[in-house]
Image (cartoon, rainbow, N blue to C red):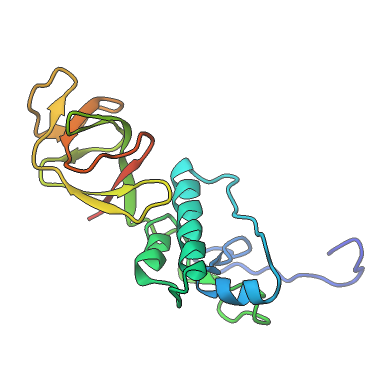
Length: 199
């Protein structure tokens, strides 16, 4: 019961799978930036508390790219940008109350998150045609890394060769925080995230 609404109760029930008080779908308004602009909205907040640095980086970058696409007249939202929202840990998506009372805005089948991608390494430097990165999650030769750079669409990098910090060839990056070197014809900015699809 709320203090300002005496006698009004919010029913809570529990099923064998659990309760569903706190598993509302995540808000997703990127495809509607044009409508938000038409309504006079000039800024909005992206939720970052209790989120990973990867989540904040990916979502902020995706909304930036969406805004740029809208300003260039490349609308509806390009699929390459929309895909970015499926590369972060998320629940189902909804538009909240922007278009009236939402239907099916809670996940009743599971309280879990969709996690299809994870960060494999963080770029420390780029020199002499090599990405120098700090490993975060295990990956091996043949891996296809999805590079997330600020203000850029993702690039795919196939790991055809890998060296350790002593320039010795390795087949697997499997020690947390180890330095790995990966060839790339394209320079990659420091701080970029190399992510990999979970299979």
